[in-house]
Image (tube, rainbow, N blue to C red):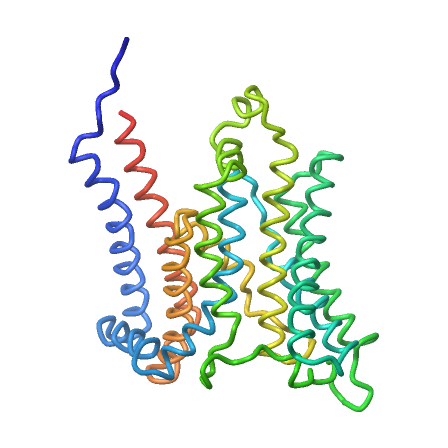
Amino acid sequence: MTVQAAPSPSKKSLKVLAPLIGVLLALIVSGLLIALAGVNPIEAYGKLVTGAFGGPRQLTEVILKAAPILIIALGLAVAFQARVWNIGAEGQYHLGALFGGAIALTFPNLPSIVLIPLMLIAGTLGGLLWSALAGLLHLKRGVNLIICTLMLNYIGILLVQYAARVPLRDDGGFLPESARFVAAAQMPRLFGSRLHIGVLIALLLVGVIYILLWRTPLGFQLRAVGANLSVARAVGIDTSQRILTALLISGALSGLAGVIEVSYTYTRLKQSVSDGYGFTGILVALLGQMHPVGVLVAAVLFAALMMGAQALNISLQVPVAVAGVLQALLVLGVLAGSAIAQKESSE
């Protein structure tokens, strides 16, 4: 019997250090780009940090921005653990906003304690149905899942724009948008602050997704499908059903994020109800290594970069797009470092 040697301390250290080195390289490259724009990188990074964490107001804005990203990324982490490449979170987010918004506009006289749960359920169902459509096209008709989910994004976005322009448009308004949601349809705030119950839901979901993935038979099966599809099928796992399950969970959470955000931030259906959260969620799930705690850290980091970039633009006239470049470089650096560490560990 062959006994496999335990990983050496140096290999364990490499597994931690390699992604950190990737982050450092991303910061250096971004600093060079900032320098090319004629700005001191050290000063720029200082403004970036203070713009995101410089006080209670900034910290509150970061948390509010991180909440929808975190919810979406947690759902994507479930899908990616099963190697189900759902690129359609943006469309699922929009369907959640549409379904939840329709409930808010249809039943404005309901009390908040009834209306808010109905909106959350409807939004979750909207995202779930949109992901189910992609899953059925993939499993029943063999449509490429990446292309299918990507294309459904644009249909979902256009559906929201159509609804805001025609069937749900405010008759008394001049803009292509719905009437403002009544107060009972807006996310209740926590402790008199600007934080709302959606933030609490996002934090609770971190624990829920962790338990799902690592403490339940379903989570084991999802990870087994992601590790090796053929082996999972050989041991009796219904891989098609698990692929669809991963998609449904992912779509449901994207839809939940959509209804929470449209209820609190936008308080109406309009042409644009997203800051690209669905696409950002993909990067956050990858940067967080598809682990709920890692996703939480990555979501806060990305939200901080977004808010800090705005302060950087105002104070030093550095383009806001720098934040997007830094986000992409961070993901590439961490993934490259992790791949190198994994390769070294396997040798």
